[in-house]
Length: 127
Image (cartoon, rainbow, N blue to C red; front, side):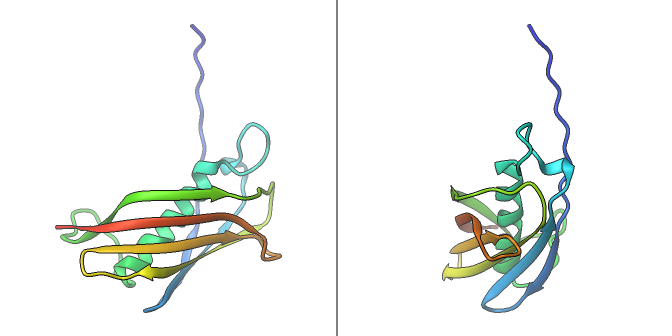
């Protein structure tokens, strides 16, 4: 049996949250690249999911043990293209905003506006 180990590191920031949308920015670094040298799909999905969650939170700072955290119950990710470097932007906006269940569409784009990932996520309030 062959032993394989993997390591990575993802860093990004939430750059804005208002009633209608949330935005984030992530610089492509070696820590999020797959062995082929392009962004790992999981890093793109993680980035988009966290930006979407921040929209559902309405700007409230997520913290461990909080009473009402919006857990994603579905993620539908369309990986459309990829990059090896640059700065990516995520824009999350409402598809449906409910009291307990909300659906968000998040697109991750490159500096030229090309869509790398189109993610639809449904979140339920975990109370």
